[in-house]
Image: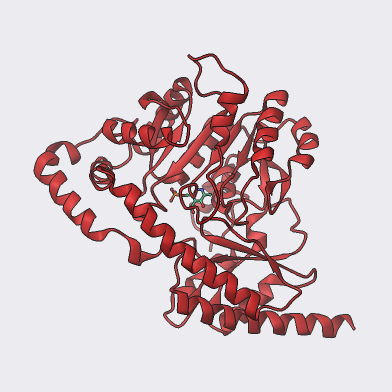
Length: 415
Ligand SMILES: Cc1ncc(COP(=O)(O)O)c(C=O)c1O
């Protein structure tokens, strides 16, 4: 419906459309639907009591500061804690390198604001995080996409795309959303070297890095960048801007993420963030600090890992037991998602509707490709963190019924 406002919308909003699938996903909140659609953490693992105690403590000891406006950069003890935690993964950042954001999603928007002129190219993985596409689209971005396989970004297909002059690359090295894939160590080195060769910086988005269920932690791109290029000691952070968040380790409702970047870039982000929200909630930052301190966060992450590892295993097991042999899927070593590939010709939107009729939901794969890209095959993203193990088994059973029916129809029409 058009109103007096419609004709006044800024040009940059023209290409932004709601999706029919998004609307349908609302149905997935019905209790009878088993949803593998959202990227939601398990609510059972939220440390509610610890939050209760922390709120009480913050309000008692620091109420007047925690309820006041704060610095745009964020609450300093929290930034220090983040810098110390990251040091364990080799990321050498100090407080001046860390900006607290209202979730990583705000960091993506600030990156778009800072770096993207209308018509600029950004190199993304295909598929990639839908929320990043949404954040960048509004700035009039053009995409160059490079495919992923089970070892993450296909660095062998990267050079041609880099020659087309993207402004930056947006990369998800750990347990990619939606692919569930992890960028192999050798490819991490290749990527950083190619970035340096072509002078194209990298935005490394790492919300899931700590949620690893098997294998060894791999070095972040920001670390390889610093080490490989033997930057002199004063220049600790160079070609890579790194993002992470408490959404998957504590709770997404607190909306707390952070950016690691060189101090001059942080200053620029600070100016942009002032225009967006002045600063991230002071109260939430105090509470998160109080919750995470004294080793609680580490212990909590261990608990989450064991809960999610079990759910991943249940899902992978159910898939291999129940899904037809024409389907293949990734084996995520961490994170929240399994990515399923179905034979060419399967219409995932139709499958989505058929699945809803069976009371099970997933996100059709084409949502995760840039708007000008053509997804080559039919894909589904399944989340395994939010449903209980017995629901996962039942959900995969229902989904396999819908998939088999679609495949049957496909075979019938192709005969
Ligand atoms: C890859 C990726 N980046 C960023 C985000 C946004 O996270 P946040 O809750 O911190 O805004 C998500 C959330 O699912 C994500 O998967």
